[in-house]
Image (tube, rainbow, N blue to C red; front, side, top):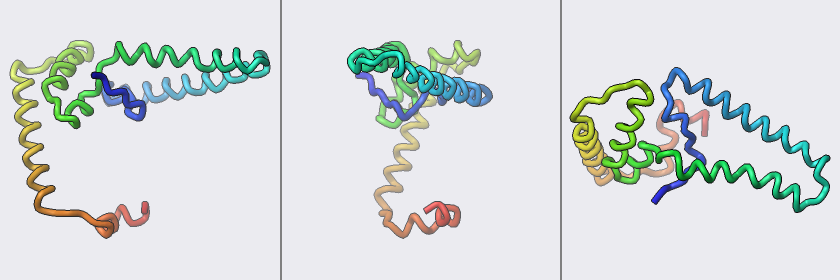
Length: 141
């Protein structure tokens, strides 16, 4: 089952040096989409306008079957094996090499972080005042 999370963009799957470029390209695509909305003056019938605006979304849904799920999302939903498989397929594309024991190392680190999280969450509870304890959070709130 694929989980489509539109809020999480594929920027996390790009090298940090190329993230700015990918962000700019996605913003240009958004701006071009807004420019294409000028077709309102060309298409007067609301049915055709609705089709013209909705059909490009089919490209987005086509990506649903082509793009892999986010490894971070898979780790968040307790699926480290699938995350390791996707990371292994991404490594050659990015020109990186992974060690042979990568999957087992990832699984060990995941289990260790899960045990730390469960130990932390069982011993303490958080309240509304915890938002104001860090000094950098006070102005933001």
